Amino acid sequence: MKIIMLGAPGAGKGTQAKKIAGRYRIPHISTGDIFRANIKGGTELGMKAKAYMDQGQLVPDDVTIGMLLDRISEPDCADGYVLDGFPRTIPQAESLKAALEKRGEKMDYAIDVDVPDEAIVTRMGGRRACVSCGATYHIVFNPTKQEGICDACGEKLVLRDDDKPETVQNRLGVYHDQTQPLIEYYRNEGILRTVDGTKDLNEVFEDIINVLGA
Ligand code: ADP
Ligand code: AMP
Image 1: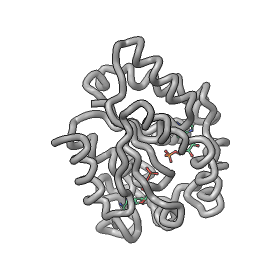
Image 2: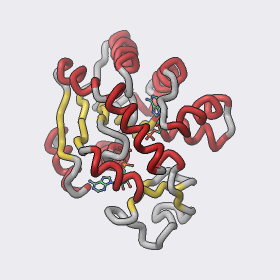
Image 3: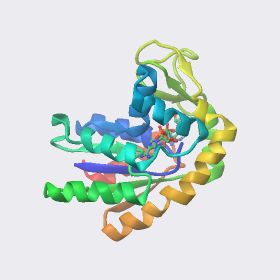
C-alpha cells in the first residue's frame, strides 16, 4: 500500500504516519526527518536544506524530488510506504506520479488530516522532538512519562527551531500557498480521503484504519 499524508504542518501527519507504518508494516518516509538527519550529519544536502528550513520555507524541488525518488527505490519500499511531508508542491506530485508510472505503479491513497490554523499554533508550540530517534510528543496531548526525555530511547527532547511561533506563521502561509492545492490535485486523481484531525490522536487513527481497511 502506498500512502501520502497531506495536511498543514503540525496537523498530525507524522504521528499518524508512524502508526500506519507500524500497523501495515511499511516504511515511514518523512522528508523533514531525512533533511534533519542530513543537517545533524553535516552533509552538503543538510547544509543546503537548513537555510530554507530555518526560515519556514520549502527546500527547492530540485533538491527534494531526487532525494525522495531515490528513497522510494530502496528495497524496503517494494511493498509500499507512507509518505509524510512529500509531496508539498504540484511539481513534486507530478514528478512522483511520472516516476511511478514508469514502473507501472501509482499511489493508493492521499489522506488529508484536516486541522484549522488556530489549532495548529497550539500543536506546534507544544510539540517536542527527540534529537536522537525522531519520535515526537506533545506536552499536553501526548506527553512523555518523564518530562523532557524520550520514552522510546531515553534521549533529550527539544522544541524544533522551526516550531517557534514566528516560523510557524511562515510555515502556515507556505502551506496555504504551495501545498494546499494538492488537496484538489488528489481529489481529481480520485485518491483523496479526508479525516478530522482535531479528534484525539487514537480516534484519528481509527478513522484512518476505516479508510485503509484492516
Ligand atoms: P506533522 O507531522 O503534521 O507536522 P505531528 O504529527 O508532529 O505533525 O503533530 C504535531 C504536534 O501535535 C505533535 O506535538 C503531536 O504530538 C501533536 N498531535 C498530533 N496529533 C494530535 C491530535 N490528534 N490531537 C492533539 N495533538 C496531536
Ligand atoms: P516537516 O518535518 O515535514 O515539518 O518539514 C520540516 C521542513 O523541511 C519544512 O518546513 C521544509 O523546510 C522542509 N521540507 C520537508 N519536506 C519538504 C518537501 N517535500 N519539500 C520542500 N521542503 C520540505
